Amino acid sequence: MFKKVLIANRGEIAVRVIRACKELGIKTVAVFSEADEHSLYRNIADECYPIGEPPASKSYLNMERILKVAEKAGVDAVHPGYGFLSENVKFADECHKRGIDFIGPPTNAMDVMGRKINAKKAMKTAGVPVLPGREEAIESEEEAIEVADEIGYPVIIKASAGGGGIGMNVVYNKEELVDTIQSTKSIAQSAFGDSTVFIEKYLEKPRHIEIQVVADKFGNVIHLGDRECSIQRRHQKLIEESPSPIMTEELRERMGNAAVKAAKAINYHSVGTVEFLYSKGEFYFLEMNTRVQVEHPITEVVTGVDIVKEQIKIAAGKKLSYKQDEITFRGHAIECRVNAEDAINDFVPAPGKIKYYRSPGGPGVRLDSGVFGGAEIPPYYDSMVAKIITYGLTREEAIERMKRALSEYMVLGIITNIPFHRAVIEEDNFLKGNLSTHYVEDNLCSFRKAMVNYALEAKDREKIFSEKVFHGNKKVIAIAGGLNAYITSLSNKNKDKYDKN
Ligand code: MV4
Picture 1 (spheres, rainbow, N blue to C red):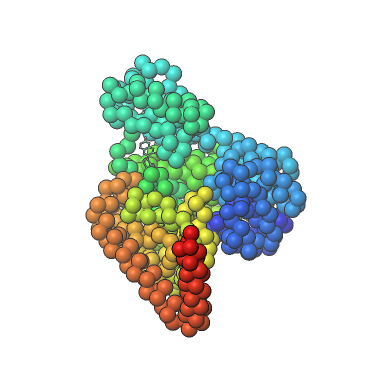
Picture 2 (cartoon, rainbow, N blue to C red; picture 1 turned 60 degrees about the horizontal axis):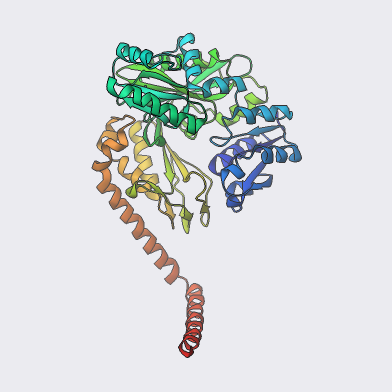
């Protein structure tokens, strides 16, 4: 087993990986940017090193700085977390070159999945269902017109190097097709330095359902069931649950087998996620994420498997701890991503300092977070504050517990999207499990009022809190009184000065 691991990440996922390392008896090395000097994960790591200025390009994406620390600290392996360098082939290669293990899949698997055309081609060859279209780059407009006529409109033009929704455009008729190919190519060129695009059938309002896979270096591959991730906005997932409300044993078996087949086809090892689009009883391969995902805890909660520990053990050359028939699914889990953002004002980021903090607890509640009272949410990175994960024997129980956890959770001093979550969790289509990737935009109007009321309640709490703390503390009043007098005298002095001039 590894003796020492560097975590090339920050925030809650750094905390999550450090926790796994502690349970495995591995020493941990944290790296931090100037914006994270007071972060929680720094304090729970055994060692920590600065890696640069706040912008990610100067710190968490700075391969040389991170690798230098890795060598200096003498680590056996690097855990990349999610985002940042987690799916960067060059970084994984550079780790290996220095004799350091990259806690992730083989680089050729990362490479295949990083290019959407290659990924789709490999999946089609392996017999995993893919969307109708061509697994080749669009070479000529005539050919694209032919393909579109064959599969029928609407079609979608996607950048092969794309991701996160950038570089994809829907085409509803022949007249728009040529222009859209041109514009998608030019966006792909400027965003990814690669203008390769392909064409496939566009699904109007699919569900996004994914399968967690776990594979060791001996060819053993299992899946840990599904996650429904349809509740998202601009490709940012907001609420995930496991199992999907539409899941049946039969569908999970089919999707699970397809995901295992996908992983085997590319000689995958480590943990990973195979994403599918689901529509009208059919599912299609979308992409594969070759990293641990934000939403992995809901799978941990319903299967009892510690995914991050398993990932580290696999990288260290251990065999899978479980066979497929030892994996059982119990109950239902939901995750709400609590972000520092103003859902009422178009979800704008709202970074700042947390003045008062009280976390939820009790039966069936797990909180994965990297913050505390007094912590700062820096403006440079994504605005996630915490993930609330609730569990219940039924979906209804998981929902009731989420309702309670959201009402207990106090993050005062910053605006969070807790009002959004409180509104969704009691919304009719959500309760019915009536979801699609368009859920948020289709339902925002109907739960807006509830969201505004919860936001007003949060404001009230903040007011009550500051009054209580301020007026309930004689020492604070005394100090504040003294300060007030001092400030008044200062400003009076200045006033005299200005009056004279
Ligand atoms: C699609 C699609 C419908 N039809 N492809 C969005 C992110 C990118 N990785 C793939 N995406 C989509 N591809 C076809 N042929 C709809 C989406 C999509 C989506 C997918 C998953 C989760 C959220 C989404 C939100 C909007 C669109």
